[in-house]
Length: 156
View 1: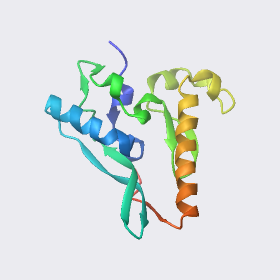
View 2 (view 1 turned 135 degrees about the vertical axis):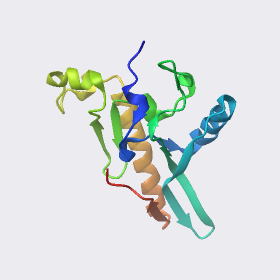
View 3 (view 1 turned 60 degrees about the horizontal axis):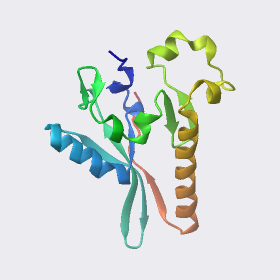
């Protein structure tokens, strides 16, 4: 059985961030297995025509509803933030950090330093692309004069 540290949540700030194009797939997958998911806006912009949410937070307290018998039943369609774990893309600070929730990280911390992260984690390249996409979205939003809204970050 695979490790499922990435699929159990206690810290609100490490629950997955979901891009707008991932939401419907996630909701459809939940419906297909009779699961309930809670998604709320995280990063939105407002212009004269209304509010557009670019990123949502998937609020999971405890076990992911798609974790069944120690396996991710949506593995092929899981959100980008799940794909990059144990790396966490911190949108607000445009940085990537390593989660201490990961058992492998805790057991191999001597191998991990800021300079070794790109070599140690295959997920690093995708995490950098995520930060880049969000940075570009924020830049475009600012250039267009849209109001940027970061919704309710909670202190754990």
